Length: 298
Image (cartoon, rainbow, N blue to C red):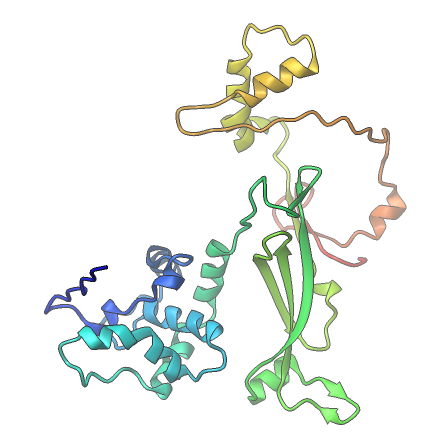
């Protein structure tokens, strides 16, 4: 097998050449650049640690948690230093990495998390669906965080029979997809908080009366189903299911349809007494149409 080394242009900066292809398969540089622009943290001049490389480094710190920051950076640049014209090029040291982390902040990483961490299961993924519904699970754990006065004040220390823990601890509650174990959401809180309080928040936004046609599903799906079975007598369930399943468009719309033969109780209503125990927070704009339901009682 023949290998061809990559060529580096004379005008290229070392920091612009650094990549970690394993990470980029999941977190493309184009996505990182888009998040950097959205967060408004793009630097004005070329640094040894530009924003995109700092983000790659922080992801690498999670993969190599047993290594120091400088050691992880060395892993990122190891191959490129063999190709770089200046073999004595010095990468950023630990203090520079720490400074760039503080400058970057947490918001940009939160935005990147929301874009990247999505459900991965397909229809045939074992253990990921039940009765056509995607299965999700909550899991909570307590993680050590750096021993700083700020972390001790915000997260606290775990108290045991032998006294407080050596490091402050943060309670982490993860929302994971069953079947793939992909983490799609996370919440962090002081170590003494309740996992239930950090559970799923359900945001509900109703379409105003008379505007149901704004529904994207109705626009992109139902209109094509109607066109597909136009003129066809809908004699039975089997005919309806077949016509819906055969609906497709030139842009790649595919429809999966099956008949649900389960029986559901009718006439069930939520009583006023039950509604009193729903932890419902109405939004400022039309709280009758827009609200968030949180775990626990109101």
